[in-house]
Amino acid sequence: PIKGYAELLADGSNADKQTIQEYGAVILKNVDHTEHLINDLKLTYQLDCGAVPYDPKSVLLTRCVREWVIDIVNDPSYANREITFESNAPTLTVSIDAGLLRRAVGNIIVNALVHNPANTKVDVILETDSDRYVYLYIRDNGSGISEAEQAELFNRYYRGTNTKEKPEGSGLGLAIAKQIVVLHGGDITVRSKPGEGTEFVVRLPLDEATGKA
Image (tube, rainbow, N blue to C red):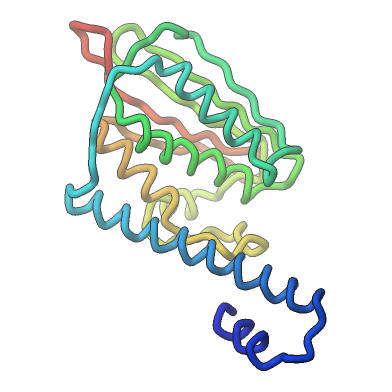
């Protein structure tokens, strides 16, 4: 599309202003998609090779996750979507690479928004389990995922059957999310049934001596 519409613009000396704007919008959309794909490919390669910059620092996890959710809510693409956040550990301090974990959590939330009906509700819940783990639940009441699809979700380039209306995805978002969570010493699981919604669970370990991740 980038090359094709650029050729049309180059050859269309008599094209009106509206046509030029329409072709330019198509080119920009596909440039953004290409840039996103290249960045995803770069990150997954870096994570594979242990070459990704990893700089964990102590942060208030509730504050961080709340800010990540607010950023998504404020994105015009999701302005009319219902997203909630709650936490039972407002003062929990953890050691994470906030930039990387934000990417992982954002990928999961956006995946729930993009691949479900517009009236789907997404709940983000942060909880602790004594002094051993912190759990981040990302739940939706959307279309749900079959067992066969669940087995493939974290594989690279896998795109489920509910992606037909959003073909621009790279198929790397959830694979990257899992790589980042594993890098933090945690794990990520999914529970879902068709027609009953989906729940992703991110579990991060807490240091028993300090109460920090």
